[in-house]
Length: 94
Image (cartoon, rainbow, N blue to C red):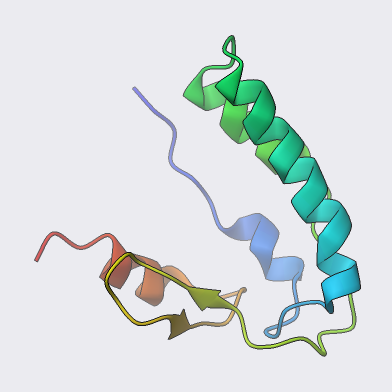
């Protein structure tokens, strides 16, 4: 059985995204994890472990509001520390 993904680590983020400089290092590290997954040998739980082990992006909260996207839909702004309502909307089957 798969694990439930917690948004608890996001609670340390400012409601607005870090500046681009604060996101670059995290984005590069996350991309490297995804490349490793693409090369095989990492199961979904291993992927989750590696992503959760990345230190959260740092910054001053001066970037734009965090947005969650869904194909064919408009971006939905959300507070990184309280994004459950937006996630429920994105993953709803109705």
